[in-house]
Length: 175
Image (cartoon, rainbow, N blue to C red):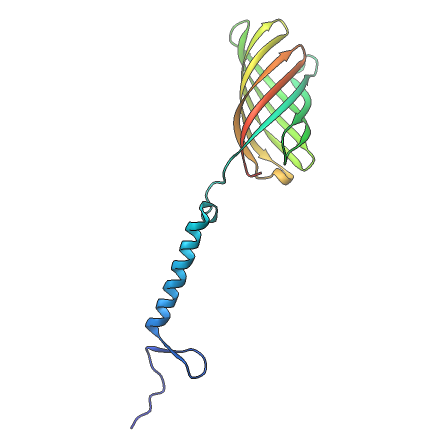
């Protein structure tokens, strides 16, 4: 009589216990199914999908620096940004004596980091030194706590002499 030293379809599971290969494969398949179900139930964030955007309304009070195409001013946004200061440079492209477009490249400085981007605006002058404009804003880069922040939105503003007041609604991701 020959003693068998190994069983090809039976795997050891501790002293005196054996599992068949079929039972082990069933256990692995069950574990994979449970993990897949958990990922589906927990939503797309687990799968690396784009995070949900948060609507953020920011107010900007800017002062043009004489005749140079430069503004300095204050930024006021809800948390996590808060209050800060902003610097921008701009290029105006008149289409008629009272209308045109402007591109402003900005950087807003907050306590925990910065946000940079571009405003694409259309303006209409109502007098020699005042007017209204509508803009499309794009947050393209951040630093510090806002390193992954991106966003886009629209806004409206007024120009009165060297002062501008702008309210933008931005759909922000990564904050």
